[in-house]
Image (cartoon, rainbow, N blue to C red):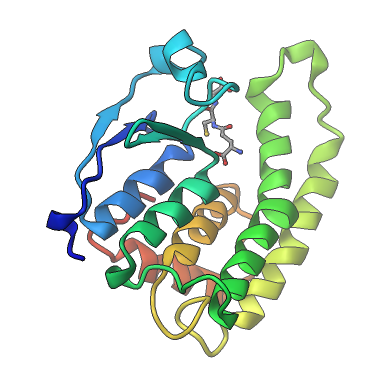
Length: 203
Ligand SMILES: N[C@@H](CCC(=O)N[C@@H](CS)C(=O)NCC(=O)O)C(=O)O
């Protein structure tokens, strides 16, 4: 079934410099049409809370059904357009590796840069704990070294082609890179350059 035969009505809730970049990038790689709703006022609005009870972006409505969490959104979108090969089918070794690397990036890396962000500008000033930064950065760098080794002789994380895994993990790497956490991981620097060279890359 080609894109034109498939009836997909997609609304993307986004806000420019945020995790919603991953959903936009995935939609654009897949060549899907969508309606984007995005400005600062949408965050925590009653409209958005009907899609994501947390009031956060990204969130999507696909054929009337809400979905949130960037990893779930991007993986599901890739599943909807199998002919683009942006994710391997369920039950395959490659699909397991997709889940492995996305879980790894979210739990072993993103959690730490998110903690840094919360304790820099998200939480009220009196609740911020600056003492966390050192251990957060160490944990992120420790995990980054694992990915740096994996990408020593590979261009992309799963199989030998670009996939939605690279969108999700690339976002987390780009976040840490902006904080100077990838200065000693040259393979990750080259990987990010490869991702940024893609026409639809939103990093
Ligand atoms: N775990 C969620 C996190 C979503 C999230 O925290 N989004 C941020 C933007 S990067 C947001 O909407 N923040 C609005 C707020 O909390 O005020 C995901 O990965 O999709």
